[in-house]
Structures are given as structure tokens and as C-alpha cells.
Length: 70
Image (cartoon, rainbow, N blue to C red; front, side, top):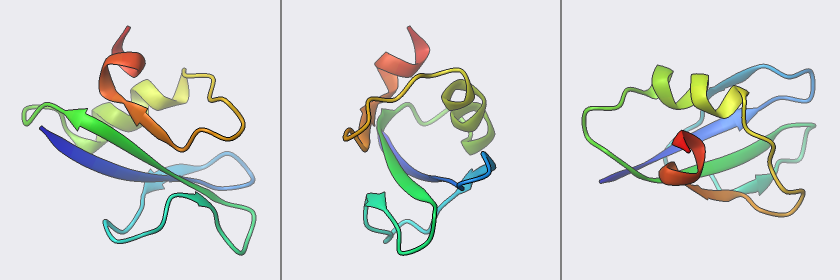
């Protein structure tokens, strides 16, 4: 299982974040999320696609893959 860091920009663009990025709001208008327990056969693009349809809680920045794929 792996963790994938993704960044959601203020205008809605979602992309892969640097693996060493800190989770939470950035100094700009972006927010970094850590998607945990991602199976090895799931690509970053798959994670981003699932995240686009997921409603995040305001102060939760670490999300389990099972919650995204449910």
C-alpha cells in the first residue's frame, strides 16, 4: 500500500503534489491531501479521478483510499 500526495488548487485544478509536501493548506490558495493505503496497481490519475467526485471535510487532509473508492 502506498500514499499519494495530491494538491487541489484554489481554482479547482487537482494534480500530484510532491511526496514530501506537508498536508493541509499551503501559503497560497491550494490544499495538499494525502491519500493513504492506495493499492500498488492504482495510478495517480485513478486517485485524482476518484478525488474529483469526493466531498472532503473542511479540516481532514488525510483520506483513506477505501473512502474514495466507496
